[in-house]
Amino acid sequence: MSNTNTLKHYLQLLEVFTLREIKSRYKASLLGPLWIILYPLLTAFILNFVFGTFINIKTEGVPYFIFVLSGLVVWNFFQQGVELAKNALIWNRDLITKTSFPISTLPVALVISKIPDFIVYLILLVIFYTFNGYQANLFWLIIIIVILPLFLLTTGVALLSSLSNAVFRDFGKIIEFAFMILFYATPIIYPESLIPDRYKFILYLNPLALFITFIRELIFNADLRPELFLYSLPISILTFLAGIYLFKRYHKKISDLI
Amino acid sequence: MKKPAITIDNLTKQYYLEKPRTLKKWFRTMFAPFERFTVLKNLSLTVDKGEFVLITGPNGSGKTTLLKLIAGITEPDRGKIITYGKIVPLIELGAGFNYELTGKENIITNAAILGISKQTLKKIIPKIINYSGIKNFIEVPLKRYSTGMLSRLAFSIAVYSDPDIILIDEIFAVGDEGFRKKSIKYLKQSQQQGRTIILTSHFSELIEIKPDRVIHLTSHL
Image (cartoon, rainbow over all chains, first blue to last red; front, side, top):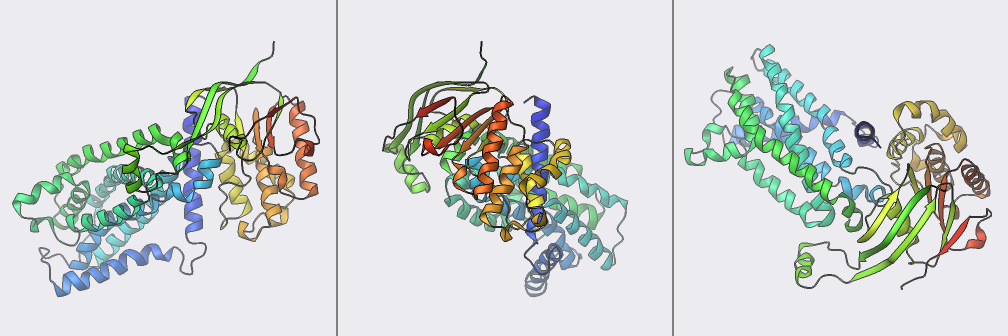
């Protein structure tokens, strides 16, 4: 196949795998796509109760519910995308060992299938933001640019974890623990201003923290901080390239090892 | 001068006897690698374009492995394989079917995996449905299908995928008499159209069409 045909085939596979995932996801469920809305709202509600009301984390005057929701928008996409995609190869064992196609499309499609959820989260954020007496304006549209590095980062981690999980099931467990640590290491339930100065550098090593801080500065302080966005690019892109590289290198071996 | 469809040069393929599933086992392999099982050893073979080859041999002789190597699903440890044209492997009918989705939705996914472009698929989808003979079930989720219906659907997609090389792994063991006849008719047609066919089977006498060549693999078990 020529290069354009290979690319066309790759995109076609991404499309059918993404649609297959979205269509089958809610087929056997009662509430269907309503879960997209329920999940972040229930999470934000619980976190609001524990950290906003009980522990009373100071968020510089921003209502805690909307504050934590703005963090969950980014976190949920990353966490759910990777959690879903880490099993992409294991679930499609039959397909991998019996047919021939570029298998990196499987995890990548699962991450893509979560993009509509991300858009819905953003809409929820706008709704509750307005509900809390804020005025959403066109400035908001800038948030959309976060999708690009967030998608690259999530896809990179998804590729790496699906590959390692296919060979060693241990990685599935390791990823769960890593998520727990990462959830607390990222300023989701607390503002980045609470991080002591000598630990501030962690913020710059964690693209998720940069995305969240970028969004919060923009919508709560009307402060555009392009440097936060730019700092997130190198690690996001490198993670993505590492994932693609390892898949290219090992994809023929996977069918023997899975 | 005949053109080759597949050339295999001095091919050796080994499998791990124990798959490295956990880290603990992996560490051990650094000091004492797993025992490897040689499935195919120093195999050389040239299949001409349009040739119909039947591969026979007992269980474990490497019939399926050979097809997987030709299809590029797995790679050889030593040696080289060169193929010419589009390959459609039918190692297992319906590999990758999603049972929550309808027959039609599965046609779209499976066709993409077999490399049928979107434009072509639009044209041939009614033909595929027609050929499968399960028109009334096409909007029903696959979990409501019988085994026979599943193989009919999968085979119909493969028929319209327009391959140069067809690899078939004992799939005639499934399906009813009508389906068998239909598939054999398809193979005869493909042969006339100049497609290259490689078929594996336990028993050569079961095949009602005359292959150009029979290759017998012996078992290492």
